[in-house]
Image (cartoon, rainbow, N blue to C red; front, side, top):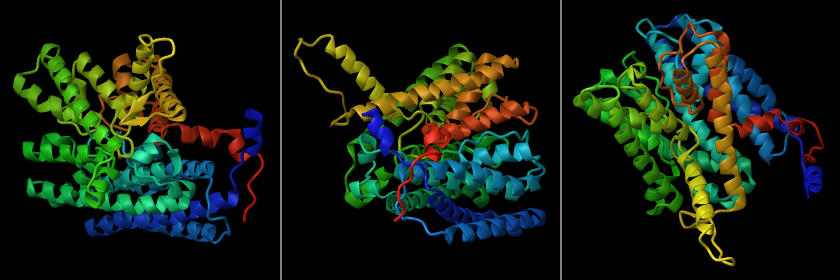
Length: 487
């Protein structure tokens, strides 16, 4: 069977990769028009020139590649290669205009990676002197990064099964990656746009300035967390803080949940399960963290009731907004947030992390193992979740991704500890990057050694695309071997 599968495998076709890479370049060029227009509005002429050069370069490159003749049907490995290449290429390109804000290449690349992966970690010590175009560009990258990852992950990464069916992927769409991507784009863009518009209007109504309302909402709905100031949520009144947190929660729920509720007047079992799981998990984290902040941290009850829920929902949704400095937290509170950030939000949402759905699958399997010890010899029991029988492939994929996430975190944590950083603070920073959260205890800064900045960049990109796509990119059989005939 293994030999037969090996003989049937196909390497990627370079014409397909180049053609669709060119199309994605044109998309990035169009998306770059927004920060260009804002730079002209704010009068940041030097940055405007950089965006013009980027847009022209992307347009020329995309125009050349899209002229190639290639099949319209895309293989799974070709889709994964395309999205991994774009999550490398886009930050590299966007680093150039971000360097116009006074950053060197390493820090500009770090900022761009953090933006596109919707993480929110930053090496800048302060945003007081940051050009307004820089602040808008960061939030804008998070917005389209969040949209892109939902569309691409559903259409190109997820396999058929419980998750795919629960997220409204039809058989026809699953067989045609390009058609599936377009169908998801139309569906998700409507929801994403509606949540964004609602977030901006609500934030503005709660007293946030319009430009700040736009930037907060871009970062919230994408669960990115780039705030337009040094204080994060602390600079807002409590009604605005609650509203932004609700927008983060909305982004951490499968976006097809809203589409089904509006268009089909029903809620899918998997989506409803994830909605409940995200809310319950955030509430539990709030309670546990509140107890730790009070008992170990010695904070006043007023501070506990204010900061514990905001930080808990920020971590669970992987939004990364903070209402206080995480460096001030006690060790117990940091550990609670570490676990919350690692788990993350719902599958098919803009949230990062392992995803609660996979944790529920693992819990279902564990429960079955325990249950089977109580069954008679010929008793039959199947793993089920949300009313559906779990397939072996779904279980294997969920458990594998959990193991891979933990492995990436462990391997990334070791260099920090080896270079003398606090073990718990190092773990906090690494989990925040891998879970694409953005909460920080202060290790991420301009003074962080370049090699460790590189580690965090790898963590952000690995976590955003859930690791397997990167393994496909590095797999020898992806590039070398028999190729499907191009018809």
